[in-house]
Image (cartoon, rainbow, N blue to C red; front, top):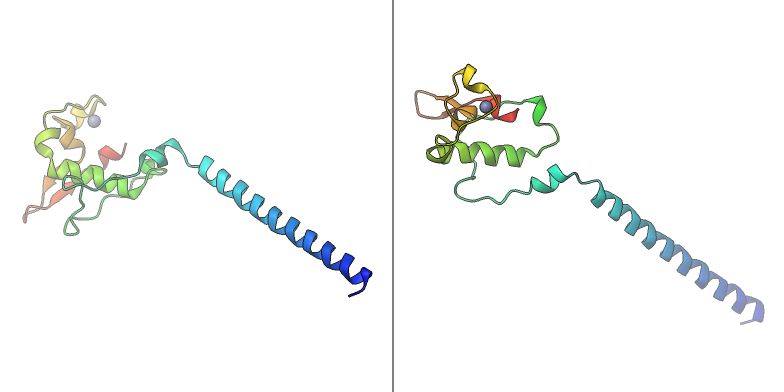
Length: 129
Ligand SMILES: [Zn+2]
């Protein structure tokens, strides 16, 4: 191996190391930015499924309401599931949004407005707002 080849070989190793380092630095920067762009709402939307928040696939689908944009569907399902499964709790919690004019007597009414003939919940989209 000539002196010229040895110098070129060392230069190639240095360039490769710099490119790998640059690629790693770019990955770290992109990953950090993605994490920083997570909104507080999205971070709070991490849902821990419990028997009280478990969605029943036999229930009707939730209404699509634009104001829920930015929050996860999982959080919406967990909230509505809780309202359905633990209506005994929500019926003791008043809602202060002014919905009593809509006939709501408690927070449960903001989620469930009635029952189908076979006992399934009829969702009220009011809780999205
Ligand atoms: Zn209300």
